Image 1 (cartoon, rainbow, N blue to C red):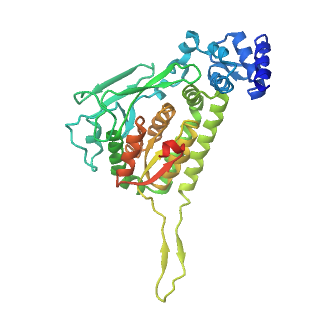
Image 2 (image 1 turned 45 degrees about the vertical axis):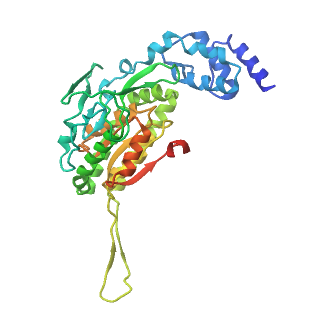
Image 3 (image 1 turned 90 degrees about the horizontal axis):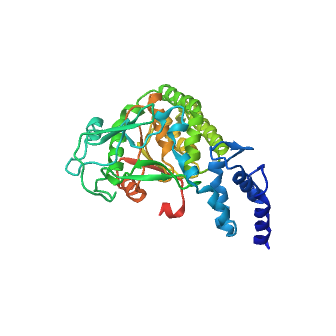
Length: 376
């Protein structure tokens, strides 16, 4: 009965020209309106972002199993052609595709013949990587100081030179960008960079750390439209939802900045005479953070901002499906004055990166949000 009811709604909806709201009850009507208009600009039609809302309809049709022919409306070459991020961004330098290690964006990969960098030097570890930058025109350039190696698997102990993977728009199945595929080696180097930067960051006065985070929050708010566009394209969520998420992301950083100056110890009553008992709150060290795909911006700031406010350094592994906004946030953190090595981002082989986190003695805290399968 349910299948026949929604199937009937789908047939009637193809004649409609106005979409209303995205709910299961009228999803078919909204889909029909979008198809009738044939507007692939990605802009809102009666409050619905067609390109990004397509994933909602496609998942609904797949689950219910009777609207699948309608999903072909969103697989045309016109829709896929809209997947390029750069033309949609005001600040095209926010589109980064390299790992963010030691304060710069680098291509995945490290020559296996090069020894591991010393934790006391942040420059030596990045010198054997290929730098990857994006200029304001959206074009990219790269240069390398190490000879490329043959293939790699992304496993710990293996190099990953030249490896990339596709970030796909789930609404259109089009490739949004190709991102450096990191593995255990890149994660290990990022941890070493974070460990080397830890002493300097934790010893900075709390008000200075708060000022840096406040500037980061300001830059995120200033770039929220570009960031929402990236979130929408790589996660498939409607643009309005992406904007709401960015608002939450800004709030998390603003709150953490204010809390940085409120970290206090306490004085306790001593059980004996002539003694005073004190408690102090101190940063633990490097924090390895793992975030999910469904809130790719706000989960980054909710985990990273408190750690940075406390004086910890961070190595972040965003979800492989949605790394672009995390890399954009890293670029904004760099502009805000976060020192090299304090905030690092590596994306790619989740198992290898996670194993590198767990094996490293420098990683003193793990922050993880994700599915049971990913956790295992």
